[in-house]
Length: 393
Image (cartoon, one colour):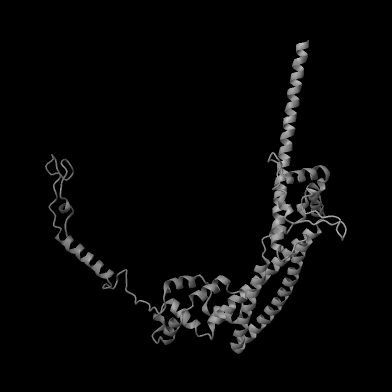
């Protein structure tokens, strides 16, 4: 073992180690051979124990777990997030008990499920099960449940089904509510008639064989912000807001009639129909699993399927009524539902409300500025009149 001072290649002049300086310390004459032997043995002992050779070493080689599945470590991490025992999981799946596992946990189990090749290796394994990794041990027991992969899919579908149906129903309720609000708004109707009086260039037809008639195009609501005066500062929307403020101020808050309109403008009824179609197709898959299931699971699945089909029938009926009601909103404005559907109508109305609010605020700011200017002019006039009086005196 090299000594500390034997490893020093260069001694700085005047340092503690410089034996040429006055009163330099001298190394004591000690027999350290025993220490060298003692510490060299200890070091060798520590080294051998770390390699597994020592009985009292801090590291003891353990037999490595047998891995039959890919990404086993990642799978084990995800499995560890499910704080349920395997028997409890299996019991919940067979009972379709959605209170035990949430949708994220079930979908993770589906993602982690072994491939066909991995299942074969698990089934053919004849060694000590304790030598397998946790992931392999978990799925070795899970795959013993008949058609467990299909049951996991049904379990996930059941958890999602009622939530999805509820969301679709809520969208239909919002759409129906928006149609009622718009058609029942007397204030909006009066504003639309007022808009026609401001500019007779907007599709005005009178004296037909049907008598006096007015054809109001929905797009007029948006064009009022496009038609500008010669100074390019005011639009017909400014004139409309000003007229209402002066003659019919009770109409200015017409948009308060529309509680559900903005939410409804974000709903695509076609998307609702597509969502229903997907649910119907998935229910057919559930029915296929029903006929392939064993007796106990058949009873549980049959109960769910009956409830789901009844719920689906109610949803289809609600959609049919909502679709018809939504088309009536287009016709209310004299539009064709095929070319101007519910989605377009609600988006136009929402845009009109935003432009109306913005223009009304601009009119208010302009009015306040004019009042301030008038007040300042009057103040200046008084000052000049006072100065003139002083001059006369």
